[in-house]
Each structure stands twice: as structure tokens, then as C-alpha cells.
Length: 600
Ligand code: FEO
Ligand code: CA
Ligand code: CA
Ligand code: CA
Image (tube, rainbow, N blue to C red; front, side):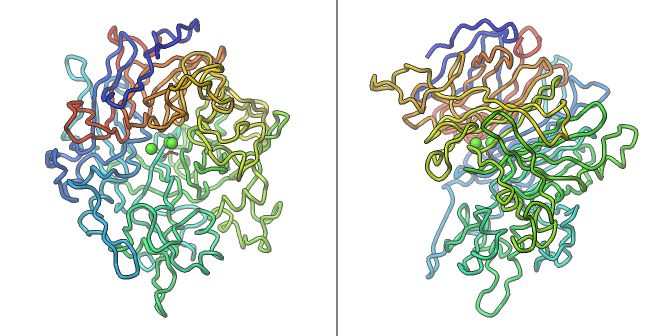
């Protein structure tokens, strides 16, 4: 499927063709650019880390010193002295693949049917979650290298101590057997996308944390909103990995017989924004509870010239909401210490998208608009802990799985990817912002805050595009594509937008996370990085990844001449691409062969 020739002056590259073959096992990028594997699962992070074993026989102690799995959101933090050739790359490791172990994940069952796991596998899986921080710099020949012995190099994992700050610090609902003070939790999990603060810290976001826990008590589960509303497992085992079989804190069942197990609050300690200072390797990361507990995809900054700000989040499940957190204080570059407290006090809002193109931000404030004890909210802490339930009461608009948010660098116009929602038209009624039943392809929506003020409580919105096939397109059998699967894309088609970011030139970069093995992606194929002109809405395909992989994570040097993206869970043998090596999630470096700005 050849790329469409376009006309936008903002898009200076020639598009690449979609790749629809299940044997495609490479990364291709626009002519005149080079993409090369830069940092793969298992690569050394800490100085002296053991070399990665191609048969995946590394143990959990080795994994704790090496790159984790499933690279996702990331950010390049420049050093001031040489910002375009020296910095720290911070990378989320969202979850793990069966390829983590030589023969995949081992599951057995006990007499009750509960899944059982080997402790060494579980430890390695916990070690492969979290975040990598690596120092990177250009060498004398201008080539980017990882600095193997850097004191900044750091792994944060599913076992790392993380402080709890904000309104839920030391709250009874955060206390567990392993942390009776309710002030420190072990680990961060399912870090999908992220955010960056104006004071130079990284915000890792905890997305699908519910799949790591189980509450087997059906009656307790029904009345415990902070479990039920977030979809904590309520069968015999947690949904993902059954860690609870060897690590009791993942068993959130309140009682085993007469004995209180002490971990029913552990799921309350996940779903937060985790603030990390990459420049202080001895610092303890902090979960910021004032920002609310969500299946949080991202936390993306919009900073006004006056220092006021909003941090936007998608809560990525079917029918969940778009949120923003507005700190009470303002960013002041002259007050570095005060800035460090800004995420501990503020107002969380959920979005309502009205059919007439207007919108409202609904404040999640205890005591107002039904957020009261009679509706199950005893205090503001209860509102933050069950932000989803609070947004239900406020009648926010259920969306088609909100993923990344991007803010235009000049206008502060805000864009969000709504990746797909197969339950639209059934469980969730079709509406103006989510207009297609059985929405397999997703859409991108954009809004402007009233007065260009990130803290405004009103906005105007419109759909930027509907993803999917071109009207009139034919499927593999030569049959016309059904109407609900055709989109409004001008240019190169794609399915299921997820990653989203603006560069300084105002180009909107879009990454996809679609199922390339499904009938509806017969024409869009492998996942991609595309670039859009926000004015003309033209879209051009810049990069295509290997079969089986999501394309995610997106960051640049400040001069936009070096770009990194992530290839998550490639399916065949990437990056070796030899048809037989174990595939590895990989950070990919992209440069323009003439040294120019990417995309021009
Ligand atoms: Fe981890 Fe919503 O993507
Ligand atoms: Ca995502
Ligand atoms: Ca996704
Ligand atoms: Ca993913």
C-alpha cells in the first residue's frame, strides 16, 4: 500500500508504504532518515550489569541491573551544557512478555484452581517492570552512545521503595501489613505513558494496575468501590501473572478464614502519578495522590506564560474519562524548592463533551455536586481513591479509551487519542465525541480551553480525525469496507492511535497500537509513526515497525535533530531480524542523514 503524495509544507518527508505482511520484521523510515536499535530489553543499565543472555536465562538479580521489558513512554532530559548531544533518557517498562523466560511463563494450579507461579520467575517479572534511566551522549564522531558507567544510570522496578505524598499519605486506606504507616509502597507497575514537569522531573503513570491483584471475596468486592470500579480481579487468580501465589501483597482478599490478610489496601497504592527526579539518582520516587487514582495513561503538561498549569490524563479503559489536574500554586523558576510541592495540592477535573461542541471541566471536590457521604464519598481522600466513581456521579463523558494527550507548543490547543472501543453502540451510547458504533479504529479529538487558559473550566472541542480506511476502500476479498470502519484521514491511513506528541515546529506525531492480525487492519498493517499537519489535517506515514509490535514512546533532543521511539513487544525476531533470535522491546534512534530537523 503505497503512501499518498501530499502537499503540506509542514511535512517535508516522503511517506512510506504500509506493511501488511506477517513476515515483516524491520523498522522502515522515510527516505533520507536512519533508524537504528539503541536500547533493548536486557541491555546493561547499571555499571557492571551481566551481559544479556539470548536464551533469556538471566536471573532476577541480573534483570534488576538491565533494561526492563515493554518499553513505552519516555523522555530525553538534556544537560544544560550540551543539550543536543548529552542527556538522560528515561524509559517506562510497562509489563512483560512470555519471552522474558526461556520457556515462557510457568503456571500450575492448586486444588482450588488458583494459579501458582515459581518465585524466581515472579521476581524476574517484577524486576522487568518499572523505569530505566540511562545517560546518553554523542561521541567524537557524533554518534549517540549509552554511557555504561554513568552514576545517573538507574533501574526503578516493581520492588523499589516509593514514597506516598499528598492527601492520602498515611491515610488508613493506604495502610497494609507491609506498610503500617501508609507512607511507602514497593514498586510502580504498568507504567504506560508519562509526563514531564517544568522543574525537570519525570512523571511515570500507572495504567492497568488492576490486573496484578485479586480479591476472592465476592461480597466484599461488591461493596469495596476502590476494587470494583477499577476492575481488580475477583476470580480465583489475578488476571495477568498470579504473583499473589508467592507474594502475599498482591492478594487483596480481606480475610482468609478468620485471619485478616492485611493487604486489601495494596491496590489503593497503585494507579497514581509517580514523580521521579532523574538528575538525583539517590532520590526516592513519589506517588502524588492529589492527582487522583486512575488507570492512568499519561500526565501531560500545559504551562501558561503566567506559571499556571494543567496536567492532562487519559484513563484508558472502555468508557472511561479524560481528566486534568490543576495545581493550586504556580510554577516559578526562581523558587525551585516550592515547585517540588506543586503536585500535592490542586483540583482534579473530569471532562464533559457536549454535542454542540462546548465542554465543561467537572471538579472532583468532596461535598459538591453529589460527591457526598450518601453517595459513598466520606471525604476528599475517598474522591481521589475512587476518582472514576466520582466522575460517574458528575456525569463526565465516557470516551473511547483515552490514551495520550498532546498540547500544541504555541496555541496550547489540546489533542487526545481515543484508541478504539468495541463496546461503543452497546454498553456506551454513540455520542458526538465518540460517533462510531463498534469503534475498531479510534479517533483524535482536540479542544481549546476558554481564553487559552489551561486552568479554565470551559472549552470548545471538535473531532480532528476519525482513523480507519478511506471511504470506498475494499477489503482483502474485494468487498467494500463497512461504513463504521471508514475514517476521515486525509493522506495515509492508520488504525488505533495511541502515542501523540507535538514537536516545536507544530507537527503532530501519531503512534499506533492496533492489532495487525485482525480483519479491520488488512489495509493499515503493522503499527506506525505518522505525522500530521494540524491546520490542513494532512497525515503522512513516517515509520513502520515490525509485525506484532506497538509503536510508542516519543522524545527528541531540544533541537529536534535526534528522535527516539519505542518498539514494544515485537513478534518475530526484531531487532536481530534474523527470523530466529528472541524478539526484544527496543528503543530506536532516528536521525536525518543530512543532520537536519526530523520531519522537515
Ligand atoms: Fe498501555 Fe493505554 O496503553
Ligand atoms: Ca498506550
Ligand atoms: Ca494502547
Ligand atoms: Ca502496549
